[in-house]
Length: 316
Image 1: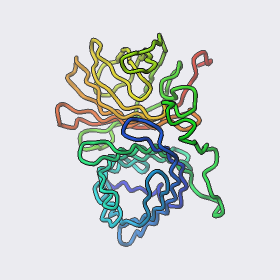
Image 2: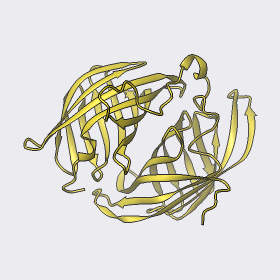
Image 3: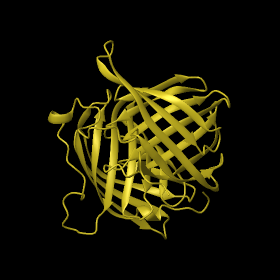
């Protein structure tokens, strides 16, 4: 988006991040404190990070703001990010202290007081950590933890794919509704349109081969910018979802029932969508980023915040 900046991200943020290992098992909470300062005269942003959890990071990095994209110059973080409007970045970067590459998106929610993020940290092609972040803008300098975020104990819930929540927040009976912003191959906005995703559980059974409880989930989606409306069934073992139905194939990683990242191929259009989604810990809304490709050529994307309506809610 030409002329965009990430002004909404400036300030102090406190985050409680859920960290998952490469098998999707909950590894522990990460306490993340970030201070973001902009120097408008220099066109730079400085980020000071203090992250303590299953792994640790402390230091600073500088970002050069080029409007439609941003360059991370280190020393703590190096790489490149697309700026999709004044509230969303999608980055491919590198953390030298960890020796890990990162695929990342971070979205500031409309009221400006909360951020949701998803980081996939890999060494080579091997996923090492997935970090599901929820951050509150710090208004009380004495606050030690973000309000409303439970501190989960891996010794108690490490083997629970839903991280102790008792349900998969992204795939509950009900509807995700809202409007998504669309953009073209240059990530220029092309307008917004209604989006609707309806979810229904249809069955559950024990998969003895994988020693997991497998569920089948019916999904209906309308408002896809680059493909026709779709209806399909997903299988899930709690840490992943996959589909091999008429019209759609693909799979995605599922972390704690509230974050998803994966690729799905729409047969009729010959298009692939990379879906990344993060639900708030209270399950009321989710941030989504969907990027569409033909082969390796980017066609455009959709992004925004959807609100959840439980099954049976009066929708008048």
